Image (tube, rainbow, N blue to C red; front, side):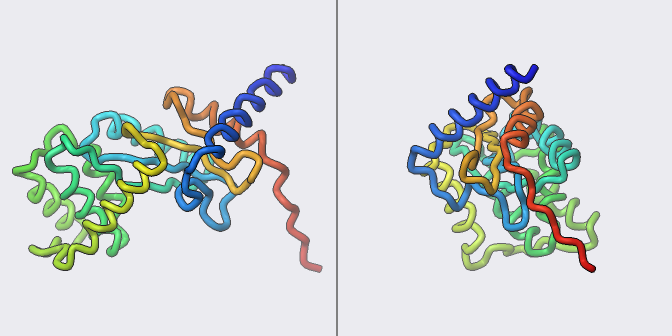
Length: 204
């Protein structure tokens, strides 16, 4: 068993070293301040695979008490995803971005370009707020969505969802989850590769 774990850790270290050797921007693939580990996902709200992955990511976020960091990655062939991502950015400003994304994924099969606004209005009403007629008048939110997509391309993202387990350790900064069916195994491997957490001195 011990030899098997050593082998798994070697694989993790090799994957991380290989990824780190590229031109990946540090800004995207690191754990948020105060967190030892996090999940980072590049997703498209109209992507069926992203909708299927959502419950798994939510479970990992809950079970491991780790942040889930989302990045927009628009798929050009999806007719309504750009508008949905802009709406999600608007709802972020009202602390409703996460529930909105979950709502869109849960209802994805019933959403079309022609009724997206109707679904968004239903969400807003259920949360006692409103989606303005012009929710991105300056185009600021669109630029943020496009900047996230450009970041994904710079990293080398080619499909959605693309998921990483990221850490605050330079030894294993991040590992891409190549098979979402092995998400929890990957988290465990990465977690076991981290140095022990520093002990907090007790107050006298």
